[in-house]
Image (tube, rainbow, N blue to C red):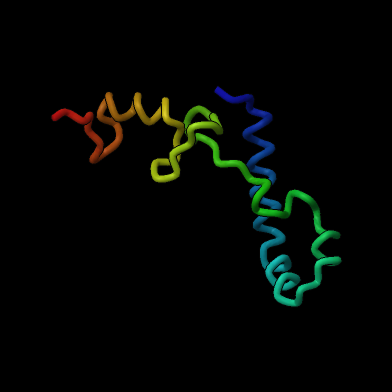
Length: 89
């Protein structure tokens, strides 16, 4: 499990991105790069990290399911993820 501080920091970044999204789009449309540099660093969407919804892990993240590979495997083997079965041929 990831430290709760990391999870909270990521939530804070996501909120900052939402807050400045319209202003960033407007500045980009005007090509006002000086104005963009005056915005907070965390206003950039690339600063937000994809994290597993259950464990908080950021590496091995599967976008389609919103979780890490290990959490996905556990959920799939326990039948918690609909439509996913273990391959056998």
